Picture (tube, rainbow over the protein chains, first blue to last red):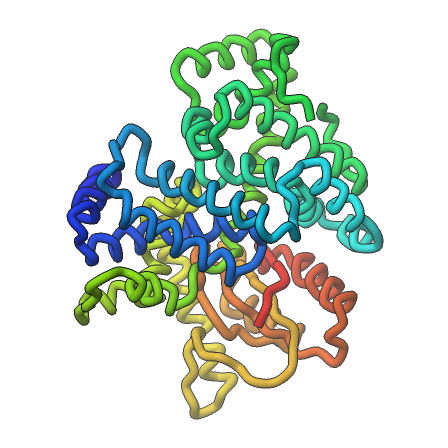
Length: 187
Length: 226
């Protein structure tokens, strides 16, 4: 069965309160949702709790799922809102980009020197230093393979903003790489 | 950050579309627009390589992450009203089932999903080799790659290269006084424990760099928790 059709069938069964269908949907999407949340909240226990909240919301609201977006897009949209709320409550990692960037900058030091020999490691480290907003859009596009429209639905911003946010996330990554000794010649 | 795109040059507009162009997620109109621009400005093609590099490292960073713990699904189900799961449901909730689903199901990104199918043969061969290494290491006792190892040490998530042979893996483990204690996880990643006398963060970073430097055998080496 086509993946989208399989998800649609599971969603219809969940709307009818079929617990086995919820297990099926969880098996298909828990890794995606958990990893998306973990990259944002950075603590496994919290990410796991939020993952369960996402699927609990699916259980409660499956009847209102219209199928305009894919199930994965819908799940990540719920996850996004849960993560933003959790981060705002926790206040350990600000959702505000400027503050997050300052935190990231403060980490620069001997570690940068140690990792200079491995460009790939530097790139991954720079990914970790991005603000939550930038890290999220990078993950959504590169790892979750979401279209511009899907990212717009998940994050709740206009498509034009999706494009500029991704652009500035990449630009910021180039700046961090340059500061770490890797000049990619862009921008 | 300025997210206002009202004063963008044509080049900037095209550059903004490139991540989705590389990922094959652009609509036909934008796709054709990018193609036309690249044909006229071949120097911009260099950016495609940068994007592929970013994408590759983002995928690796995500694939190195764990999946929810074994008890998470049962906690979810317990929070639903009128729960009475059957044996099949409990089997479906098992970690092994989820790991396979994560590797081949829609929750895995396309790049990894296709690579997973292609790598199944290799993983089987490498898993057999790793099991053989563990059997040898433990004498008469048998321990699978998923078994846990006691004692002190530092932990890493390691993915091996497609061309790594049993002899290569044996040599690497001997060189580092290391053991494979878990895996394969999604993406063909194993958890490796390295016995050390100095478990400091600086020593761990140096060890990670030494592991990563063995590029003939190691495709990816990241620090991990026990």
